[in-house]
Image (cartoon, rainbow, N blue to C red; front, side, top):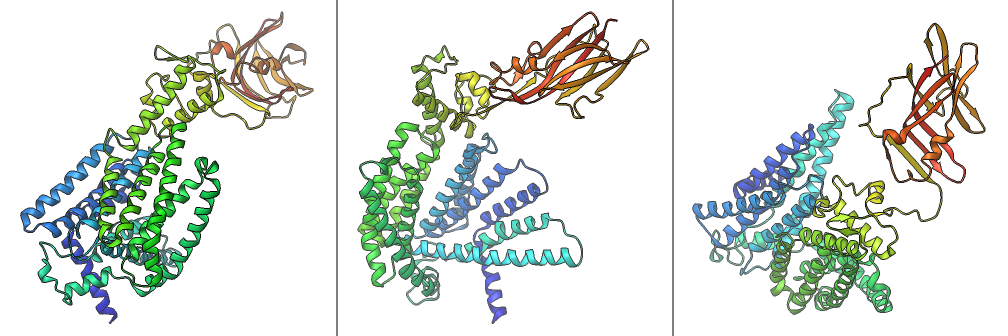
Length: 596
């Protein structure tokens, strides 16, 4: 029996390869590139994602072929359509920064929409509905994750045993195993559990009630007893209790807090997803709880989704459009539509839910109305409006100005942060070249106020360093050496010595009352010149709290008497800005000239 089951499973995987050849090709290509990436290549991300999109697109194309077409030529053409979708996706991401949010969101939304198309297109105008196909896909996904998870754990245990007991194994072996299991085997298991629905390939007449194919489809689309119990007696009661709490919260806060509570937003989205998914899964269950859920919950979803969409839109008016809020509002529209559609007839209107999801996903991906184009233009417009309102943007040049209303400061900060996070600062062409939105110093020098404001007044740390482009002239001095404040050795330590004209001199640091001085002495211990380093930190106390880079002139200090001359150049310095300066530290170049 065990061998028969194994043979049947392996046969199902083989059938998946034959049924979805282009999809399998993309999966293998993705796995190869991931293997190369594991070995050290980190520039293949966009190609791996393109292969992932291609795999789902070709699977959806194959489902469309099975439903509506027949013949080798049509199969090649429909597969070509999947390849065109893949090419269009690649063109949309080929110039995106590797680590930008758009590089993650765009493929995720694309693959999700294509997967819904794959689930839906095979049952369009069929004797089976989207809810039945959704059940089959849901069960296939759960089984694929479960079986491949067990498989990976078993393989990992074998690798660990070999590594411990026999011979050391490269730690990359775990990642390569996960690559094969989850990128190739898991999708194949999922595809093997998706039945071929009646269509041109297998006409309805070939699938009579009680026939082998009909029995297989009924098995794949039916709800197992365990899932029926889980949905009816655990998920539905919990959803009912949560709905009561949610409605009570909305009614109690409808006049105020509800409209500004950002924390509630993800909770409501999760609730809407749960209602839609559970409604689809229980659409064929005959028990009383399932019937009540189908009757009531889609209707309850409508006002909740409507209120949340309005609340999100009001927040958008204050903050401008972001890609996250764009998708929240888009999903709100989808949830409202789904509530109406599923309220009318869950079995008959489920296909319209899938179609709406695919169309709205497409809208969010196609310029100029896609999420990232709309949000970028909104944030740039909000930033320009705030700057122009306060006279800070004149002839495409930003003028720093710190005394503007706090609300306008917040708009500027929020927009700059968003454009920085999405790597779209270039859209604001009037920003300084190489402007760094993460650097508070650069932000202050550009706009005249800080991006990060301490919640409570307290000490501020000042850090300055010499511009590396500066050239230090050493002419006119005998030696140049480095000193640290405080010294690495003990205060009053030997420091550095040098010989000049047969005489030996020492450059040391002298500490008194927490202040350090640079002292040059001769071999007899007589002091030739002294420089108090308190002047160094005093210079940077006021104007350099926001300025990190010093010019050579700003970093230079001199001292001279009849015995010697000093030039001190600050390489870098830092201290805590308080009424009494403490915790000074600095690295210095010290140039010395002995006169007599």
